Image (cartoon, rainbow, N blue to C red; front, side, top):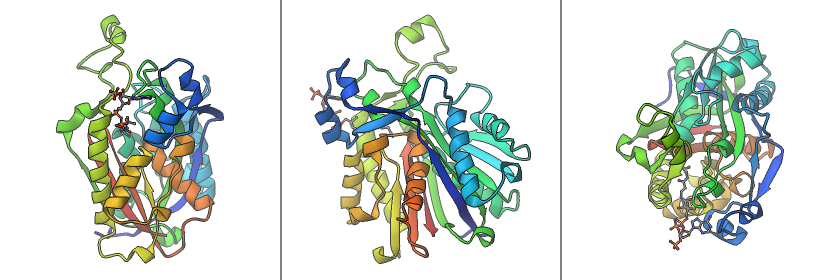
Amino acid sequence: MASILPVGIAGTGHYLPERVVPNSWFESFLDTSDEWIVQRTGIRERRYAADDETTSDLAVKASLAACEAASIEPKDLDAIILGTLTPDFQLPSTAVRVQDKLGATNAMAFDVASACTGFVNAVQVGEALIAAGRAKRVLTIGVEILSRYLDYENRGSCILFGDGAGAAVLTPHADCGQGELLKHTMGAKGSDYALIQIPGGGTVRPPSVEMLAAREQYIQLDGRGVYRFAVSKMSQLIGDMLEGIDHDELSLVVPHQVNRRIIDAALERINLDPSKVMINIDRYANTSAATVPIALDEAVRQGRIEKGKYVVLVAFGAGVTWGASLLRW
Ligand code: UT7
């Protein structure tokens, strides 16, 4: 449903840490191979943050690029909405750290905790704030330092993830004239919460020697379970967003970079030409909340998005949660 006040994406940005970690690095301490990882996931390498980089540091670099692209100053922001599952601290939010580091003193700031869906949810909340007249310039961010939450003894999960940040500034469409948000969907199915989780460190399993010994401070996932959910949810969401739209009018689908095979299987189900889909999982792996804004900004900067045509953002993740948006660029 179109919002009361049409909202657009005024500018995007991303930041990736310098350290490149190829698949071969895992071969030195795990029973795995570059061949297995490439075949089963499409990942060739990922980026890891430096020891002295924090989640908010990555977010700030992506945000400055997005603000510059949108031609606005951080002090002009009314809100900062940040999606992450790897915050600077348990408390307070990473969004307030970004607010402080940017000098965005006029912005409200809060995190959304919906894992890989975080950025897409942030965009939908930001759009609603602007459409309702509660804000005019909203900075939305997806950022992760997953390398600090991986169990490097678990070959089924640690090879999948990387670090990075992406951001987008939302304003009334009349002010920016691009990236008009046309329709959205988002949802959750909490009964599947155990498919992907960090079981330790919260109120169920507070920090303790036993919790750490059981390695419950790290991400655990049911890869096969996520695989089945992801193929069906991604194809359904893209199909819903493109209902009534001729594929010739579609410029690009920007999906969560979960696994190349999952993306390919979803596209096959809905008969969508793979050349209309942004893929960078080979270089950055799965950066959770950051995959969609990084891929969107790369697509924008590479000139892959045609003016006047449609763009679909789609993500899903732990919770399980999901969200998608249709835009006209
Ligand atoms: O954004 C959401 C978070 N992402 C996810 O939750 C990931 C979604 N799932 C996936 O991407 C895929 O399920 C994986 C890449 C995790 C696994 O691929 P799969 O084709 O589903 O493999 P599988 O889990 O069925 O495992 C097949 C075999 C197993 O060995 P056995 O039991 O057949 O002997 C695994 O132990 O592959 C083994 N395996 C590995 N072998 C080499 C699992 N990880 C590795 C590895 N290297 N890194």
